[in-house]
Image 1: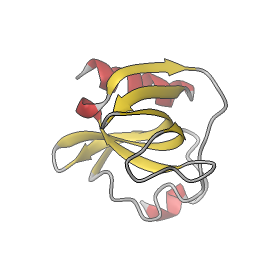
Image 2: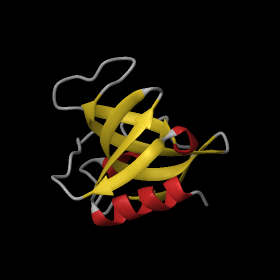
Image 3: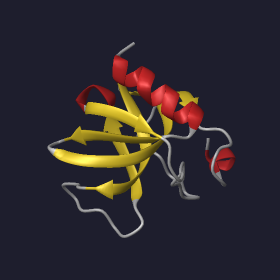
Length: 111
């Protein structure tokens, strides 16, 4: 298990923010689920601040990050950011190892 993965687990369990560099952009997000996609560790998070190659709408958006590509990962307490459409649809993870509890609304209907 990587150090990043352990930090993301902690952030999910304690509803903490994560800040990290990803694809040359600073990201701030609330991680909601950890698992794998095609054998690679990924995290599904609600990005609420920072940059993005594709832009970030006001209020934020769901993003999928490859865990090993996250750099300078830190966690901190703060208001939890989420949206009701977490797994509707979701193509970030083939296998889910850990999901935030309580799950956001509608999550139970989609997986």
